[in-house]
Length: 70
Image 1: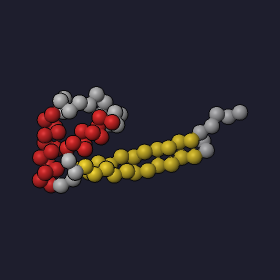
Image 2: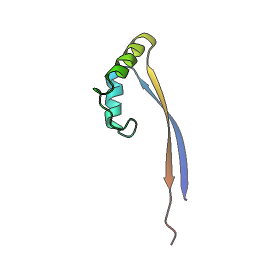
Image 3: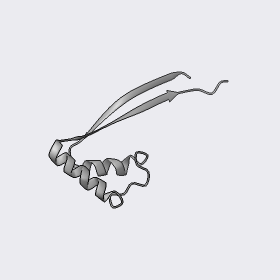
């Protein structure tokens, strides 16, 4: 291994449209996500954002650089 990096990330969502957009683009976050299949959960999250402010999500990322031995 030649390099290993880790990063803790914070995403802040101020509206439900941003959450849906993110989940549709970052497919591995919720495999098979559709707004229709998660309608009830999204409605509850929308209400929570409206009453309490932004939804904050945290994730960890790894970057591993390796080389095959000669």
